[in-house]
Length: 311
Image (cartoon, rainbow, N blue to C red; front, top):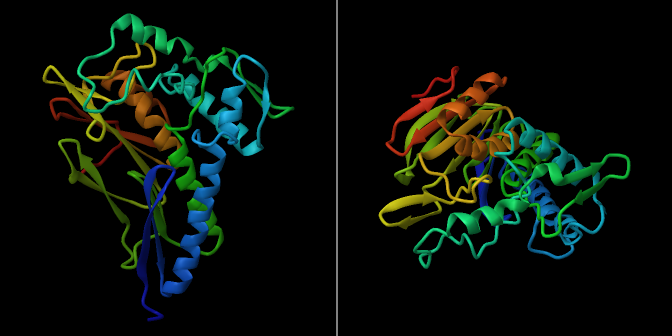
């Protein structure tokens, strides 16, 4: 049926996450071709950033930690550069060198019955330090100063990929749509009925229910919550978000949702606000332009940054 606008969507597993790409169009075949282009872009970025394949740029950088600088593509270089800016802004609460945390220490599965002792945890995070990531702009190289250091893009990669898929689809003529990367989403244009896109803020006590709704367009949102990955030890819930200073899980906050103009920034800011805590986190957000935060604490109390209107 041509002429009537509709939302065409497709879900697929990419970068280890569920991505859903939605396109507003009056022709299904045309919409599918545009979605194909968006998916191809996410797959391209996955190859670039993955730590699961030995020949990815990320792994080459990691394998040469403490040995020598590694030349990378300008795209990866720029992403690392932007990551380091966010690290400086959040005083290290966001740090792509978190990759050195050993999965044996934190696997967040049913076998985990106790927290590692403070000494072990502290030793594990010794290698997390964004200041030891050395960039050479002229040579386009990345050098990790300490042996055993590892970088990973778990805190920013999904948002970056969502934003890139959106740009590619916009360049191909898609006037409105949504790219949702497991809750990190970016929107543009309007729905077929001319209204803004409605996004749900997940209920941290029941992930498939909405805590509240917001209407947005040409904006992005990302949520970091302990309701998806956590472990119960002695009746207490510990989130999968690890404090890079102590190596132990964060407590006190159930979820942080960031709303801003770009999915990469939203993705990158959600975790550090969780780590910084309610007061310091909101204080930082309130000093930044075009960015808002919604925080739900362990007692289900809602906190928001200054300029937010929540339904």
